[in-house]
Length: 420
Image 1 (tube, one colour):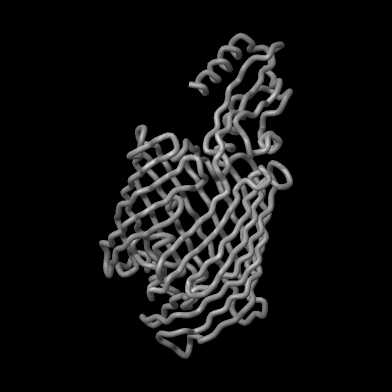
Image 2 (image 1 turned 90 degrees about the vertical axis):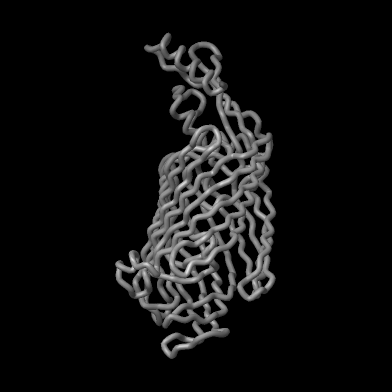
């Protein structure tokens, strides 16, 4: 009703003043407690003395609703005299200091956990800062800083520091072995927003990658240890046409990622990895939401046990298991229907039914691998979501996937946030 009222004012006034420009007298921000008013005005297109433009106002509201610190936003317009108007942006804030605790067991029944803390509205300017500590047989940690509007309403910066150690399966000769894998990295990215829907990230990552054989099969062609320094050059382009209304999402989004990796001493060949995620969301009735993600990716087709695209529970196919295979190409479709079963002032209980399906190209293999039966995985399933509407990304999900293709498995997948 509030948005409709604002539209009505703009419509009536525009009919009576066709020959005159309606001007913004002032932009007023209401409802914000932790988000700085100066920050909201900094990223807004509407400024005092500018022409009153409902399209720009709508764009500002969508931009605000995409911020981690905002759960909802709307606007109102009121005349202030002399063909000028006051524009009010009303903000409903999220709680943004978010602790996280994930507890799980690995395939060999080792107890593991990840403990983290992130602030998504540092200094009231929607700067994301935080990190995590992980104990999964080995200790790992990460520190992340991301400020999309650090320098202006278009230009920002991100920095990531990570020391991640895991026990990784490596596949070769129809068998596998396990390696202690460590990735010790420093990454810096420049963030630039061309306009409301298009943005780009460009950056560089310097990392040391170490593989140490632990147990399993061996092959003279597969090294037992590997320790090498590498440069990774990264580019991300995103088109974002999504609109949000609390837990509901509508619209289309596309994100393209490209990485070029080069060993500093030339001991290993350079390679590339590229993939594109396409997202499509549609509101169905008052309680339903149809969500889709299609990923297509290719990498340099080297015949290597360390191929970049994995088949994994937590990444692409729910119920399939943890890193059960790897490839140099990937096609994955995730589609699910989310339905709100219970909704209160701050709480939402959601159910969902999904189908995850994908196929992979074997390292060194032809593109025809994508249509070979042993590479195709199809896993339908069901799940639930427990959502807190006033805390950013406070979505606890439980999914159960059941495989219907060759050599299939089944299982539960737990996580924070929607799967995609």
